[in-house]
Length: 306
Image (cartoon, helix red, strand yellow):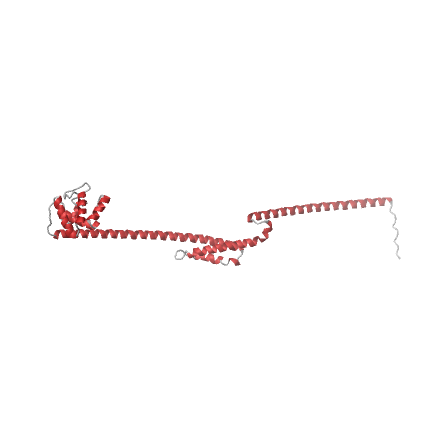
């Protein structure tokens, strides 16, 4: 059996010194503990403050995303799915539009650039959403450019066709006018030949004699009866009063009022002095231009000239 040795008592001075040392140690420990506790409190407060700031930033970011996308906070978990679906819908509509434009480009505009964009976008279901959005934008721009190019080609084609049609119409009109002029000239020449070869008719330059000559020539050379001759009488009564010397300020001359009078030279060189020559030319002119004296008279009544 072991026995503890009795502790020898300290002297009053040593005991007092030991007490003071113990007291200083406790104070030092207390001071150190307080400092550590205060430092911990500061660190804890800083951590709480930072957590509060991070939380506020997160809330603000969530609110901003909700506002920009139109989604509520509880919907943001499906945002990626919605974005992908929307991108796919836009891709489909863009591909449809591009297909229609490609169909209109045949024989007009090179469709290679647009077809290349369409081919790249066609596999949109296998692509990342960002890639789908970018390719959709590229395809839409290519579609717009192609549509503009086709419209320009169509515009130029329409203008070219209109110009060609106008030129064709002009050429046809000129040909018709030339044909009519040739027919009139041929008729006048025929009438002149007939007048030269025909037996002498009543002759004479007086109005009555001129009418007798005209009646005979209208019947023998053109087969016109009295009804046509009646129209002829009214027509030349109005134009010249059947005077072979009739002349108006515009230069119209003779019984038929040829303008200029020298036209009647095709019927004879004595056109200025011979009523018969004037009548021969005038009947040929009426036949070529109006078909008959009544046709010429109707035109004169309506327009005051023939």
